[in-house]
Image (cartoon, rainbow, N blue to C red; front, side, top):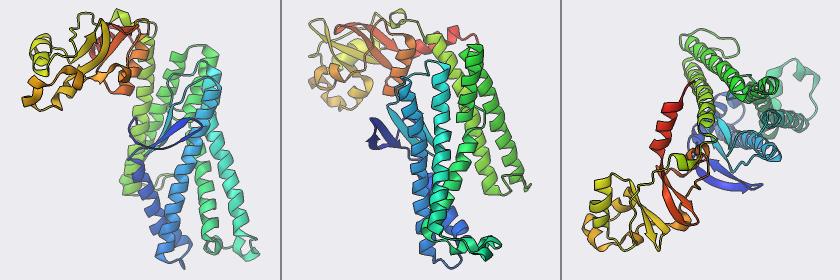
Length: 392
């Protein structure tokens, strides 16, 4: 979920929309515009049902953003840095640059989202009832007539309020990566003092919940009516997909913790490659390829001048230049300048290095001290280290 389109910045947090969000917006709009609203309001013209459905879908996305902002702001209160929020197919994700420093921080950050959704849900239901106006006595005995009497505004508010409450309750299922799983992890962490055991417990429950959804989805596809979920091919396939997604995230969450534990405290200087061949800024690309990249098997060449790092030339930089121009193109014209490079200090730990490489999309990063190149840390070096030290 690192990709997406930036749509703005709220309280210093960048907001991104992932392309997959369009799928859920389209599905909700179609579901409301074609099925729900026409059933509730048989007198509504098609354009009104569809436009109201589209507005409701967009407001649901805004509700999810409100949920994620609650996580982010509470996390910030506990000293965690949240640079961005990404909204995608299954909701939203507040990106943390580091884990919670203690179980209390994890607890309050995790529970903030569901609490915010509950408060928002009840507030929307209250506003919807106000917009609906007084309910006549006969309407209480005929829910269909009551729904048909609602204005578009009241319909959207009541639907959105109900959905927010349902989402809050669903998120409190005690299985990782749902908020309830994080709350459970925080509690177990606080009781045992062991975040690995806490994460393992929450991850196992998350996997079980994922398999539960998958099993119910299969039954729905086979035509069995499942309590709470009903029946149907489309609904069953959707439930299978959600269950698979939760299951995979539950597994990944525990693996990420093991990875962090294996890398934290190990300095970059221990794994960096010190034999990396550098070049001067005037060396042409053909010589760079023939004399350094091909013979030494490097993927990138640091560019140095006066014993100071000036930039980095990667294979991708070279591929952007026509082969016939390599002999006339100095390295300085295609290199990524020093001030645009993501570099590492030799005392930084490997967990920080993995996070930097993951966020930058690069396969290697220069290790620098006072603008002097000490070596290069490659992604494969980190993977080899993990393979050798993975004991869990």
